Image (cartoon, rainbow, N blue to C red; front, side):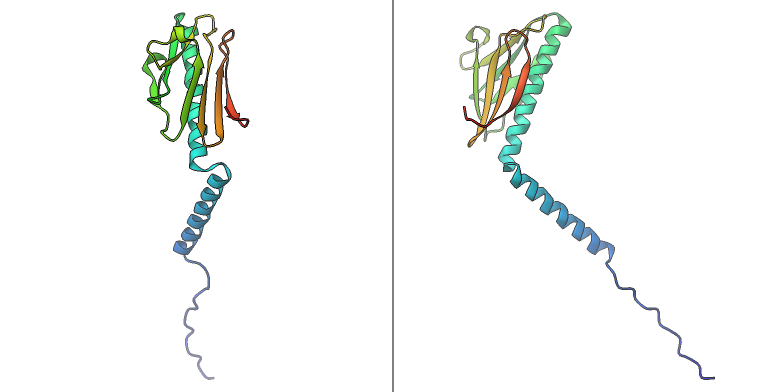
Length: 158
């Protein structure tokens, strides 16, 4: 009986780990670029993030006024694009965003600076902050009776 030559191991067709990782990375990059473009781009993300951060810090300042039983102030400087909340919290607004403040002048500590005071009973001096990039506006409103902070995009302009 004739002998067969030994079989050489066959290479199985398929993808290597490196090839699979490259495909997954490409899909992730394409997804991120598409999501960014559909949601207003990088400036739109900056607008949303800054608006949500300011609203969060306003709520924090109100909570601190209630918790400590002492008046607390949230300060914002639209020209310098800086803000300061209770307990020394502070931050900046991205330079690509325009900042507008409306509120009681009596509460501010310096010219050109805006301030919203929160009182121990939860009330506030009231005011509003608008952040804008191109045609997109993020509006933050603080009710003067309740101190309630409402925030969100505004489509109808300033």
